[in-house]
Image 1 (cartoon, rainbow, N blue to C red):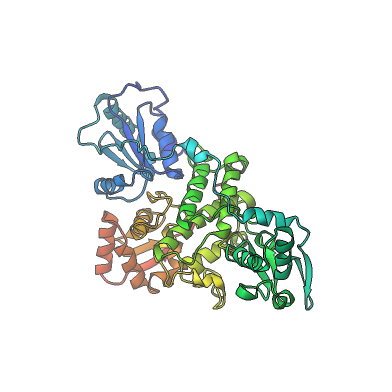
Image 2: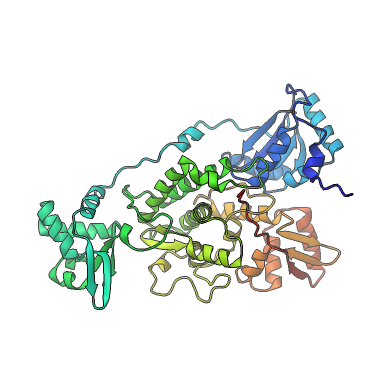
Length: 508
């Protein structure tokens, strides 16, 4: 009869809670980030050992990252130390033999933390507490928001024919100007300027002969040609549609960070104790999720065209990762190929007056408008206004920042425009450290890579030779990198691709 217990069970079966004295002079230190399933699993295992465990959030203490990499040679988290004895990540922890784990616990129990241990960061007083993060989102109300609210209930909005097409929930510029003149006492020129301002601020959109009419807005000519809708009435199925963003527009970079931090904390709060599953049902019922939804509405009118390359990268990576979780909460995790195709081509946010699906963000914006997997055409046509937001060139490093399914996560979960290229390179290094992303077999002269490199081969050079050179250039110094250098210097290298784990992490 075979023993079916996991390596985690074997490593802790003799080390029950309270077996060791809690007054140990040393400690276990875990370097982790919020929302990292492997970090949660490692901390759950360590918490059963009965000795002090100090958790350092590398996401909040970026100054620790460089020193941690210098000590360990690795860019991923978690990284675990028993006093100054380096164990590795979660995978190494779970594989420890019981007698070795007991020896390490004895070190912590009997020896003080050495003076040369990696110093622990002080709590940063500028960091927001969990309570502050959970507070309801507040903003400065836009001066036109009340006007829009009054107009919604004024009886002006209705159905209009243009040719053979009926436009429901629409109105003409002249109707809006007449209402502003009669009900709000504005001079007609001021009323026309207000209509233009509503268009500029994306409270409304043109739906027939649409677009900004400038001096012709609200004139007799405009009345016979153009129809408009309030943005919230424009038919689309985006997860943040249906209500009007009433705040003064928030800077894109700031808004994306707020959204990513809120959804990440929610995700963390509903991770199982072993880090293997997420209670999405409980997460969607959490009042904090409704506060997240209120904040996501503010994406509707965010300004995108002035963003720099670095700001676009940080903004759209953060929004993509938040949108995936939001999609899971509203629609459930996709379970087969067709569901995944629908999910990534359907789940969307209304951003800056335009609809962006997950596919649009990844392949349209971040990959410089390239065709995605199983896509017949580019996401954006030449006349698509979203093309103005797309990066001019593909950025291969984004593939390692869009979510994290590897056994070790990059020590960054929210991205900032400052030093974004360095952050992305760190994410790539962390990804390549994992054996479910890159395996180098010196004996066979073979390199096995994640399916990501197969799906997006063109982003990494297009040929096996260029692909392997890219991988080598983006690896941190390690025995794996040395092995790859040896294989490449020996001549022809076989490249194959590892199976991709599509299993859902939902607890339901």
